[in-house]
Image (cartoon, rainbow, N blue to C red):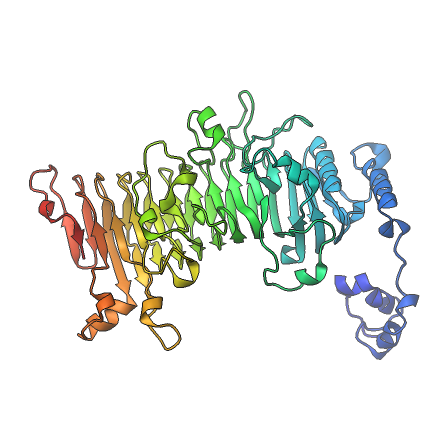
Length: 554
């Protein structure tokens, strides 16, 4: 009896294993090796429409008309009909997986057909899919999913994109989206009220050149081009009209890699709530890597009674780096929403190119967040309330690590590390200027439990002391804040501790205080515990334990 090996899908695709098993031989046998030397005898020729864009679209339209639940179409449809929805493999509908032909219209037509049929899943197998403005609309109960990093969605610029932003240079379009950065969900085509939709398991990139995608460059995992302006990985700006049965759209985003964009992910709509966002990696963006809620100054925030949107969402293992490449005032992660929870997430290596004085300014009331220089290059900018951060990190950012602006937020076991990192700043910014934790005068009723400031690196032969110095302060408090609790916090700096632990005289550059600075008096009640230092108020301003010590530094 001949040996039989179940062929892999890859083997079947190339035709060799299929021929081998048909002949009753192993896919790894000498007989198969002989057959593999004659591929023309075993491979099926590609259909004529593969090389002809016009015939490809004709074939797509022919197949699309059978994507329905009718009895007549059931026998001819090219996919399996599921009981509670549809699953569509885009390769069954002539979508080009090689990055040559633009497939935006085909993907949108498939999504719209599934929407009318009650929802379903659109599978994008491993390949390169070229898309362009207006990019891919997310519709009610329609999910797009790929095969992980081997499914690459490449957004390309076109004249349509240039025209769309000609009058509004602040506008941004998501490769996958409901609405845009400045406009809510459009309902013109299908009166779509999207709920329970999503994107998962794929890699979203951009190509800044019009025309064909350079596939050879995509094989290199380095960044060969600058980010594409006005294009984000995902923008959700979902708002329902009237009184919806459910106030939450509950979209989902999972396992997405997003590179070289204007924004990474922006969640802006009043009804983009109830989300679970996990395993999102954003690398290199001109603005924010992750934006949750509309910032002050956004035109629709004023119309929506100052409601930023994006509330009540959960974020798990989000990883943001290389934001603010535009050199403006953006942080890696900016949060304006309320009641969100972040677990095990990191914001790192975000860039700053403005001087030190500009990142130590108190925010003015009603000031546009985009004009607020103190958050430039920060890891986290928390401008919403009632949020929870647990086990999250800000690391090697050009600006402050954590910028705690607004009241009533909880930070548990979070770390600010190596802020104003020497490789994340450019002139006139320098290293050793920012704070690992910056706590605003607006941050009343915040609790910081077991948080750390850490500068873990000391000088070496490769990096001298003047360059390896990271944050200027472990904790910087503007003061004038009420009911502030910092419990069990710790500040560590390897450059300082190497001398302090060994009782060695410090060089002049290390003579200044570094653990914390309290600029103005704190309003009682409060409790501050950082290393061995404890500042605790009484219930009334009279008798405040350290009333005369401001400015307090250590």
